[in-house]
Length: 101
Image (cartoon, rainbow, N blue to C red; front, side, top):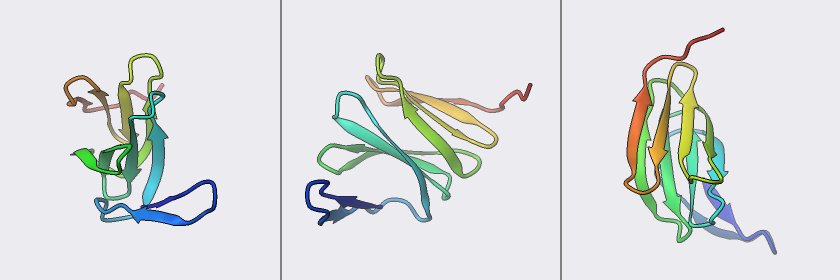
Protein backbone atom coordinates (compact mmCIF):
# COMPACT_ATOMS: atom_id res chain seq x y z
CA UNK A 1 0.00 0.00 0.00
CA UNK A 2 1.35 3.42 -0.94
CA UNK A 3 0.68 6.66 0.96
CA UNK A 4 0.76 9.91 -1.03
CA UNK A 5 0.77 13.59 -0.04
CA UNK A 6 -2.60 14.90 -1.22
CA UNK A 7 -1.31 18.43 -1.75
CA UNK A 8 1.31 17.60 -4.38
CA UNK A 9 0.95 13.88 -5.16
CA UNK A 10 4.40 12.84 -3.95
CA UNK A 11 4.92 9.43 -2.44
CA UNK A 12 5.31 9.69 1.34
CA UNK A 13 5.89 6.06 2.23
CA UNK A 14 5.07 2.53 1.10
CA UNK A 15 3.40 0.56 3.90
CA UNK A 16 4.46 -3.04 4.31
CA UNK A 17 2.21 -5.56 5.94
CA UNK A 18 -0.16 -7.02 3.37
CA UNK A 19 0.96 -9.89 1.16
CA UNK A 20 -1.62 -9.30 -1.60
CA UNK A 21 -3.83 -6.60 -3.17
CA UNK A 22 -5.44 -4.11 -0.77
CA UNK A 23 -9.18 -3.91 -1.52
CA UNK A 24 -10.40 -1.36 1.02
CA UNK A 25 -9.28 1.40 3.38
CA UNK A 26 -11.26 3.23 6.07
CA UNK A 27 -10.29 6.22 8.18
CA UNK A 28 -11.39 6.84 11.78
CA UNK A 29 -13.22 10.14 12.22
CA UNK A 30 -10.73 11.27 14.88
CA UNK A 31 -7.88 11.00 12.35
CA UNK A 32 -5.73 8.92 14.71
CA UNK A 33 -5.87 5.68 12.71
CA UNK A 34 -6.99 3.96 9.56
CA UNK A 35 -7.52 0.34 8.54
CA UNK A 36 -6.81 -1.60 5.39
CA UNK A 37 -8.26 -4.91 4.18
CA UNK A 38 -6.63 -7.19 1.66
CA UNK A 39 -6.95 -10.25 -0.54
CA UNK A 40 -4.48 -11.88 1.88
CA UNK A 41 -7.45 -12.20 4.31
CA UNK A 42 -5.98 -9.70 6.76
CA UNK A 43 -6.98 -6.35 8.26
CA UNK A 44 -4.28 -4.01 9.52
CA UNK A 45 -4.95 -1.02 11.76
CA UNK A 46 -2.42 1.79 11.18
CA UNK A 47 -1.65 4.92 13.19
CA UNK A 48 -1.55 8.40 11.69
CA UNK A 49 2.26 8.01 11.93
CA UNK A 50 1.94 5.10 9.44
CA UNK A 51 2.75 2.37 11.97
CA UNK A 52 0.85 -0.93 11.90
CA UNK A 53 -0.48 -1.55 15.41
CA UNK A 54 -2.82 -4.52 14.96
CA UNK A 55 -3.24 -7.23 12.34
CA UNK A 56 -5.95 -9.88 12.32
CA UNK A 57 -7.34 -12.30 9.75
CA UNK A 58 -10.64 -13.53 8.35
CA UNK A 59 -11.50 -16.75 6.53
CA UNK A 60 -11.56 -15.08 3.08
CA UNK A 61 -10.40 -11.91 1.29
CA UNK A 62 -11.49 -8.72 3.03
CA UNK A 63 -14.31 -6.98 1.16
CA UNK A 64 -15.03 -4.00 3.43
CA UNK A 65 -13.71 -2.12 6.45
CA UNK A 66 -15.62 0.72 8.10
CA UNK A 67 -15.27 2.77 11.29
CA UNK A 68 -18.29 3.78 13.35
CA UNK A 69 -17.95 7.59 13.60
CA UNK A 70 -19.36 7.68 17.15
CA UNK A 71 -17.74 4.69 18.87
CA UNK A 72 -14.62 4.34 16.68
CA UNK A 73 -15.31 0.60 16.43
CA UNK A 74 -14.00 -0.99 13.25
CA UNK A 75 -16.17 -3.47 11.36
CA UNK A 76 -14.52 -5.71 8.80
CA UNK A 77 -15.99 -8.41 6.61
CA UNK A 78 -15.18 -11.02 4.04
CA UNK A 79 -17.62 -13.05 1.98
CA UNK A 80 -18.01 -15.58 4.81
CA UNK A 81 -17.46 -13.77 8.12
CA UNK A 82 -17.11 -10.44 9.85
CA UNK A 83 -15.50 -8.98 12.96
CA UNK A 84 -15.75 -5.94 15.21
CA UNK A 85 -12.81 -4.32 16.96
CA UNK A 86 -13.07 -2.14 20.02
CA UNK A 87 -10.72 0.83 19.79
CA UNK A 88 -10.13 0.98 23.54
CA UNK A 89 -8.50 -2.44 23.94
CA UNK A 90 -7.94 -3.61 20.37
CA UNK A 91 -9.90 -6.81 20.97
CA UNK A 92 -11.53 -8.49 17.99
CA UNK A 93 -14.91 -10.19 18.19
CA UNK A 94 -15.22 -12.60 15.26
CA UNK A 95 -18.58 -13.73 13.99
CA UNK A 96 -18.26 -17.04 12.18
CA UNK A 97 -21.17 -16.89 9.79
CA UNK A 98 -23.27 -14.40 7.92
CA UNK A 99 -26.96 -15.09 7.53
CA UNK A 100 -28.16 -14.38 3.99
CA UNK A 101 -31.79 -13.25 3.82
